[in-house]
Length: 265
Length: 255
Image (tube, rainbow over all chains, first blue to last red):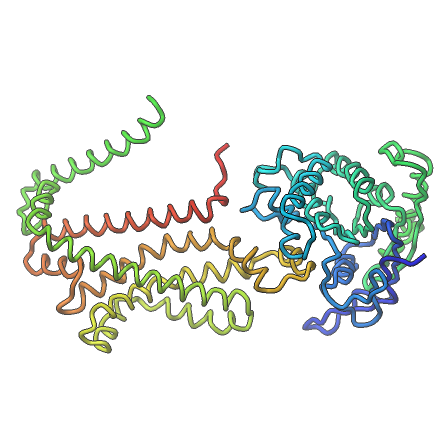
């Protein structure tokens, strides 16, 4: 099977006044079409750099990023992005915010079709009736839902989510996890999720990639087998506990601490 | 009391009380008209010089507006240059701060001497010089503090820098721009009046004020002050109305 996203041995260093600062050093990630990969790792390990590479916003020093059999050399319209900050435009209504990408990307949709699609996406994430509100009238979780619709409006091949739920409270976050499953069912996409929440990673993704501390390389890959739709109850099974334990252990290694040291301290 | 009636009646009472106190102060001290004017002296002063107020007021107004428009154009352009280029910001900022630190009253004789006799040009120039600074600074700060995610959202779709500017950077800067424009309106009037008062054989309300001064005609001087305040308030609220139209989204609805 051909992978939709293929990141091969990527190395990258930022140039700083104190000399080059390596952030990625031998990163390998593959995502099959329709797959959903979560990337976890210690803070500051270069997770966000990874999203910018896939989006074509920057080029790696070494290595290759392939998208759908084409090498990524610059930004491409087949990518949708959502960040921790929903970055909605305050002077536009929610509907007009969602439609923004279609003003940039050439689209076959008529104005009416585009609006219908935006309304459909908004109802899918539970924002029916908020189309004409301004972002300032919405709660943080609702803004994030709108930001998700904007990322999907132009039917991107790849959805890049950079800690999109990081700033939300625990209950809103779990709500949005379930929304993500509902969206993926109706609007299939290939996804890369950057997160620091291990429960989020095993609930949403079918593969979790653990990055080492900076400079980051692929340290561990955990497959999350799925049988049928997931519910929040699945997070409280022995299987989930085992998966979380493995990931927690891997993060500790990535942070340069072993479980033995933690026990001794 | 009804909320709307109160919003109207309370300020009116305050103004009436203020005028009554002023009138009483002049009457109580027995100040003659060559020493101080009372509110009751103002209507006769306006009546006596009404044609002058109209023609001089118009001159002051159009020079201020032209100077302000130039300041908006130049200030926005300068702000864009400094907002988009770090190098240009580092180069221009100290110059701008230095220029702004010079009290503009000292520039008046220089300008008046350089372009002697060109009174309209001099006055517009001074209104412009004094008011472009806040606009340039606010636009440059608005543009340079644009969160990178805003750019990334559009850049990741392949949008050009110009598209990012029109769709995001410009509208996002509008609230700061209008905040600066409110300050600039007042400053532009100061510039116009400085030139009108100081330069010899001037025109405009500033010159009318100066002729009142040479004659110790306090009613005329105070009438000019009232006329200037009136023009300033009108221009200020025009800016407020424009702000409501173009940046009304930045206002949080109460509650």
